[in-house]
Image (cartoon, rainbow, N blue to C red):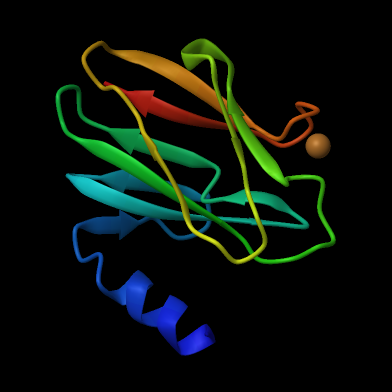
Amino acid sequence: MRRLLMALVLAVPLVACKSGGGAAAVTGGKLQITADDKGFSPSSVEVKKGEPLELVFTRTTEDTCANEVVFPELSVKKELPLKQPVSVAVPTTEARTLTFQCGMGMYKSKVVVQ
Ligand SMILES: [Cu+2]
């Protein structure tokens, strides 16, 4: 199972991760996001306006309250079953910052469309 996850991560060559800041710039396509006891990582995603963006969330631990992900501005709420990838297509038609967070709003993360 772990090997499969690694393979999935390595299969996304268009994602460039900046070290340290937890931010990921996406130039197109899918971005894997992990939900664990520290929240969502990466917790900040940057994408160019008009680029397709699909976030694939995978919760990797029972020891977190991030068992769902909520995009308040999009009125999107998805359950995150343990170790099951859940896709969310994010609209990028306008430049704005979209928040995504756990159900209680403790783990706040963001997608910056610019
Ligand atoms: Cu929470």
